View: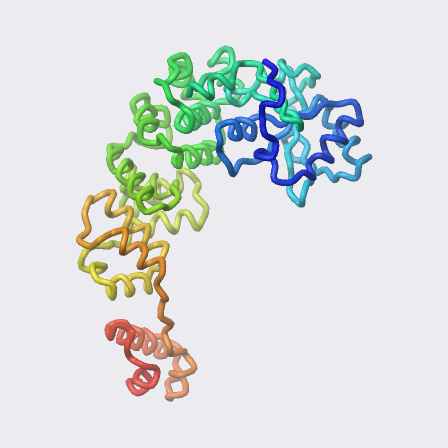
Length: 404
């Protein structure tokens, strides 16, 4: 379906410098269009998306067109059908239209085409197969706009065939269902996901993890995870959670506090792990070092009314563990235990605005007092710091020096 002047291009691109790429392709006899998430999200009134483009030029032809117009291109590893073009010091991915793809011992091999409908047929969901040119004309081959307006998330053609092309599409289906759905889940798609769920075992765990993290911060995450758990979609690497109610409380708390959703927090309340379990989850999903450290610290360090009830208590806690950790622990504790005795929203704002005191003594101050052994220097600093904290940070530098 062709819709003339349907999309406001100014809502899709921030910089018109990308027009140079469109001109380069057209000057070389090709056509280039925006595709996928950028078009979908613009039509849905969302923002913050990445720009993806498609062209009927082959990768070699696209590189030649760019070079002749002073545009730099970069290779994108194994993505043999995608060319990276530098626009405003950022890489814009441009895929060449593909009709079929086969796989042999040497890896993926793509058959290119100039048939836009053939390219659309190989995309995953109808809402992701909508194209737009630089003039705002929209090309919709599988009624994706209607599905987007009606909140219907479904695969193009046979759901099983689309999933077999890339089993990660199971995760993508649930993610987009959670973002855009306004109707009960498409049964053909769901049954295909259930039937082929073991195919996720063949997907690199990092790819599955990244899709899971994206899914966890979507709007209808609780209902979507319930469907996933009811059908054991992720059973090969994550157990079924019994804490969807805690996830629902967390999403409400975060929304009330006007924070952004955080995938690690949401994963934590789903499993409420002890430190050993937290390490196991982090290792299974191959967290980054920083993600693992945060996840395990949440499990190890407690927060309760006794150590955070008053402003001074909160300041001491923030001093030891930091603002973000303290905010996260409050949100997690409330979601899991459902109570703390202070006004949470006021406390969170108070923590955000805290000025964290700086311990006024350094190692050289201890050395100046005649203590030169490294171990004794460290012990002295620790004792002085604890005295300072116990005084509610009121002991002055001179008072602390006198205690040495």
